[in-house]
Image (tube, helix red, strand yellow):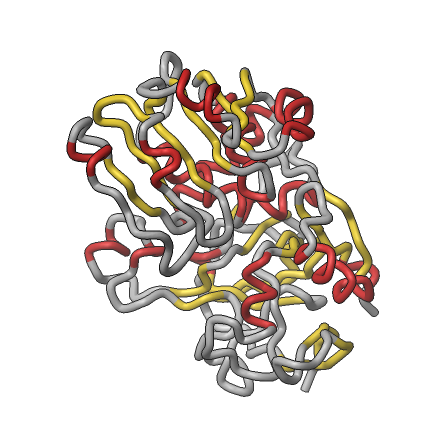
Length: 348
């Protein structure tokens, strides 16, 4: 039995600490990856603290995985030993429902499985994530990392990148459109970079005047301060699309009048109940409000090639594995610009 070094939480009250896990034996369609970098997402904290319920302990978080192929099964023909690859939030799906057949595994009608904390063939019966030295992943859910992308900066593309890219693509963002990115954090900074690269007039919408210059450097054409009611009024009916990345409950009504006729605001940050929605701005301008959840494997691969073409990666702070608990504390204080990434070479 070969044990893999990792960091795990043993309960919702415990810190992440060194641990050993056993990975499943390599199957015909499996790929073994030596993990180089793993991004840190707020979702990892939700699972570690069991804030969404259903966490199975011990839990090994991590779903923004970049590494190199070290072995694969006989059914894997498109990869090479030593090739740099990635694995994201989705670790499995039914493969036969209408969503899966449309390359929309994130909307699998049977329910997709996550790269960690999902029932699996792994020893112990549940999947373990990327805060570890290696991982075994089904070939369908392994992504090719294009040459030229910084591997550490590319790790958050597998969550923050695809979470923002997917709705921008679905709603057809292109030159000539005006797009607002609401909230400048891990998701928002990626939204600015991607919308700008797609050729849209990109407006950063934030409560903080202090973030204005940073937003411009990231690619925003303009900055709209959402607490400035005069400025907000001047932008009524100006936006084709709003990407709302605010991570917690808030009043969506504050932004609806910014949309043009047939404009859409897509929610990617907040999950769950929120303020009561006023339908009047929707009815009188045929506006819509929608949601989006990461992206399918095909689209995630397309996103990686798009980012390589435009040299887009996340703005990151690289940390060692033993700094993870401090990183969690800092995330909760919004003290990171804009994603932590773990250098897994620091884990022995």
